[in-house]
Image: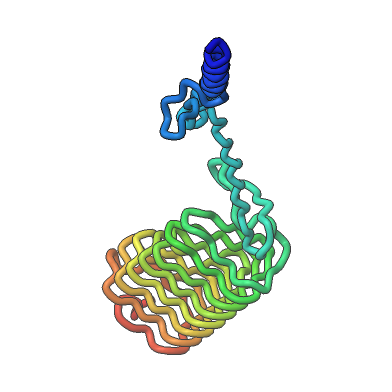
Length: 248
């Protein structure tokens, strides 16, 4: 009887040891489906920078400086301008005593002074531009609509025509024109004196006054609807004298 009690006691101790071992294993106390311990999430580092902070503290890029425009001269290269009245730059300064085989296109509001210069083709003036030519040669035409003034003086020669309309004053004095002179709807004083014009002179609907004196004209001399009427005289005209210029 004593032996049976000892045996039973030993069995109970063995079972208790097994249960205890099972309870103290690596998965003891878990609440998950697999009996494991749920890991505690790690907090984000306190030094992390948010997207909004990065945007606020980002360095603003510096815009590159705008290039300074380079003026193109009448001769087709970089201009080295002189000055005209009022301290303004002269668009044609580098052509003084020189020459160009390009058209000279005088921009709006600019002044072009040609002193003893040679222009192969044409001189074209934009609105409010001014041309002063002295002792110069222009191989083609002088063309203008809306210019401030056109002055061809002191031995200047024009190989083509002079056509100026809706502009200011026009002077052709001591000059030579191989083609025609056509002036219309101008508001400034028009003076054509002591010049040789191989073609015709047509002066129409100008309002600043007209003087035509001492010229030799190969074609006709015609003046119409100018206010006041043209004045002058002493012209040699191979063609007909018409309209307001019939007595000049």
